[in-house]
Image (cartoon, rainbow, N blue to C red; front, side, top):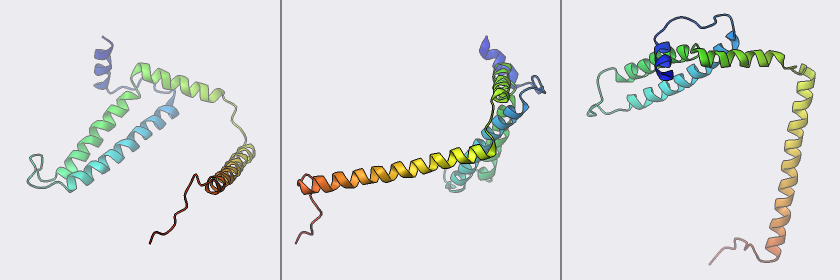
Length: 150
C-alpha cells in the first residue's frame, strides 16, 4: 500500500507543505539535478559515438536520449522532494540545522588552518617514519636496492 501512494505522489503537481524546509528541499533538488546533468552529459557522449549500424541508433539519438533523461529525472526529483515522508524528513533536517550554533568566520578559518597544518605535520612525520624503516630494511638486506643488471 505504501508503494502505491509513492507512485501516486509522482503524478501530482502540488507542493507538500510549501513554506517549510524550502532551503533543504531546493539544495536536495539541485544535487539530484547536478547528478542528472552529469548522467545526461555522459549519455550524450556515448550516444554521439554510437555507430549507425547499431539497433538502437536513430537520427538525433544523441539529443533525444539525454533530453528524456533530464526531463523525466527532473520531474521525479521535483516530485521526490514533495513526497510527504521524504519532505517531512527534509523539513526536520532544516529545523535541526537552524538549531545548530555555527562558528564565526574567524573561528572557522582558525580551525581550518589548524586542521591543514596538522595534516601536513603528520604527513611529514609519516614520511620520516617511512624513510627510517626503508633505511633500516635496506641496511638489513630485507629490501634489495635496484641494482642494474648486466
